[in-house]
Amino acid sequence: MLELAGGVLTPTTLAEARGAVVLEGTAEVEGLAEVVEGLTEEVDGLTEVLDDLTEVLEGFTEVVEGFTVVTAAEEGFAEVAEGAADVVPGAAAT
Image (cartoon, rainbow, N blue to C red; front, side, top):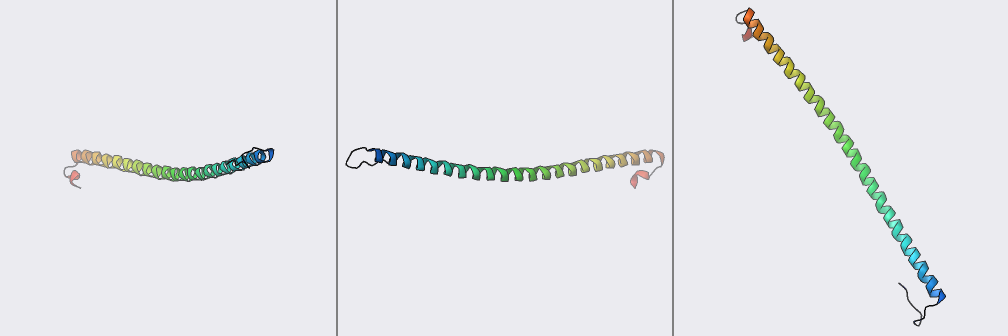
């Protein structure tokens, strides 16, 4: 804030005011830099969480694919059993 000595703006008060404005602006820029750095760290942390979630989803996908293979195998065995029942009476009961 600019304060005048006796209501007169002098070169000294003007220089002091400029210096104060520069210092205040510098402090604000430094504060903003800290905020940006903090946000960058948060984004990095979120990126790590997303990477972990991606790995978990990939694992679930593998499990589902495994169940699909098992289901297909069970259906194949059921077809074999039905075919065996056609050839050997009572084979489907096992």
